[in-house]
Length: 142
Ligand code: DQA
Image (cartoon, protein in one colour):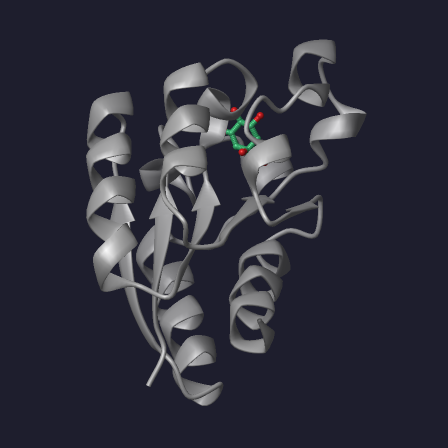
């Protein structure tokens, strides 16, 4: 059975209370339950990790390379400037799918640039929580 990992970056633990007009009002734990349920329905095991710290996300990506088939990653604001996370994704050989709840191309100018996109297998942005579900589905189909 395929085992996948979902990684949430900084501030995503506050989903539900954080800027609900942009990020929706689903509680973080409920979202994770839904993600795991969808993965299970697609015949995959799914673990979830969240950190507000760049190094912890990098450590988890390194760990993932031997434990998981692939990763769904919402790197939060690190998406836009973390060359260290970009290098970690490039270093691990498993597919990483970049996801964003909001449409990063329709917001502040700095959000239009993703330094991780070139090293990710693919990117999904702006579909609300469905961005995660579709990321999971993409891993099921790879
Ligand atoms: C986000 C978009 C980022 O620009 C922002 O910093 C986030 C969340 C999203 O899911 O829409 O923290 O990745």
